[in-house]
Image (cartoon, rainbow, N blue to C red; front, side, top):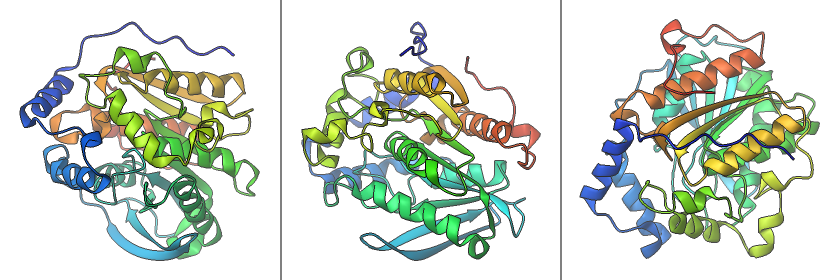
Amino acid sequence: MKSPSAPSLSPLDPEARHVLELGRQADALPFETGTPQQARRAYEEGLPDQQGEREPVASVTERAILGPGGSLTLRIYRGQDAPDATAPALLYLHGGGWVIGNLDSHDEICRWFANMAACVVVSPAYRLAPEHKFPAAVEDCRAVLSFMQEAPGDLGIDARRIAVAGDSAGGNLATVLSLLARGDPTPLTAQLLFYPNTDAAQTADSYRRFAEGFGLTASTMAWFRDHYVRYAADFDDWRASPLRAESLAGAAPAFVAIAGHDILADEGEAYAGRLQDDGVPVVLRRWPGQIHGFVSMGRHGTAARQAVGAAVAAWRGFDPAFGKIRPTDASPASHRD
């Protein structure tokens, strides 16, 4: 298996340095020193310091559907230029290590996608670990996708033009969903992945290179993973480690965004390489000076919005029937192929 080689290490972007300095000044305890409940509170309290002003969209509504574990809340965004019917649709799965994160933590990203792509974004409050271990989150996300496919008129979307997206752990769930959906009558049009987690074993060299000092640490990622999986044998289950799937052939075309200073960089690169080896169209973009989670840091610079714009441009390229992307959102980002 041939994977694309990782680029040589570049200097940190000024906005990434600024975010890291804010973290040092806050002197917050690492998540792994407390409980999941404490981690969630700390994460939610820090959101206003990371995210910018909420961009207006045509509408934001919430509804509940019946999921595998009971009621499952969805937040639904309709972009300002999205048609009232047969709009393209995006299922966005939030990150947070399967333990933290919620409908508010990625609200900014969902609004950008809705407006840039003139689409409907569906964001689910999937079950979190450790209260609900693997594969509960996978099952919830699959249920939401099935709802979107089976009730497109209810949402005003085109079931033939659904994509899935996510960041970090949400990127993991998006990759798994893309593999699960290979046999669906209406295949996904794209998987849009921001620094996805693809291997639960956590043995890639980037875990060594960026173990500490770059935001998400190796010890925190292990804490997330150990709350999520049931036992070590789950590491080999491709629904937890999509990089370990026997074949990725037939998965949706992929956009993969890599942050250069990120413990997940190497497994993101490896997953993009596996997809290419198995004949899946891939748009790979690298932000060499950025850190993990930069797409959720819109308050501190332009890279976050640029990355979403690049994902929408790739989605548009995968789907010839896609609506127009706003010219201002298609401007070149500070990345390299």
